[in-house]
Image (cartoon, rainbow, N blue to C red):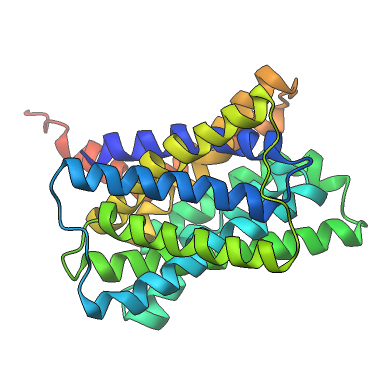
Length: 300
């Protein structure tokens, strides 16, 4: 089950990078994000009704829901949408791949979770691999102050993502399913974005193009309803440290998509980076020990 959830999360969220980039244009980012989560929240509430699951959370959960809605379904996406306006998506992915380390550190600081050496070692290997994959893009922006500001905004978004992970883990420990918590948190995030957009004077009209509407539907249904539910179920089953390691793999899928749609050129260094990411996966999940532990002992 964990492997299936992991694969779904990586494949879906790995393709949302290009979808987000295709949404940038005439519609302000807060409006696009608000539409995304209004649609996703309504779909999740409909699913809860169909499955006859409990919709109203207990009173003790509301403060966590409000914090998750602000961090994970508002500030997180605002940061990444604005970062991608000034920074190549590959560089943003490099920053986002620090999520496993942030989850480990924040989990230790705020929730008293023990640090898992294999998860940290795997995340570091994967991070080095991601840097290798995007080093050519990084080299062209070392002296660009606007790009560095964009990277800083992306890092702030990753911190918000990490905070949302820990909040989800806390609510799942209270017995709440991500279906229910995501519904309310997305509704809260969409409401904050809507109020903020109206105060800023943004129009809530959408771009009537097939590409914009198609990406909006994909991000709402697959990226939000399916992707976030699968990922936060992983957080509850595996812990935020190991679950967040799939964020290191998102850029690999994004690169494959970029190769098809944007003509990304692979280099020897990029191949090395890919191998490091695979090795990081093996270390993070302690798969090497499990594989060798299952090998039959030779009899003399």
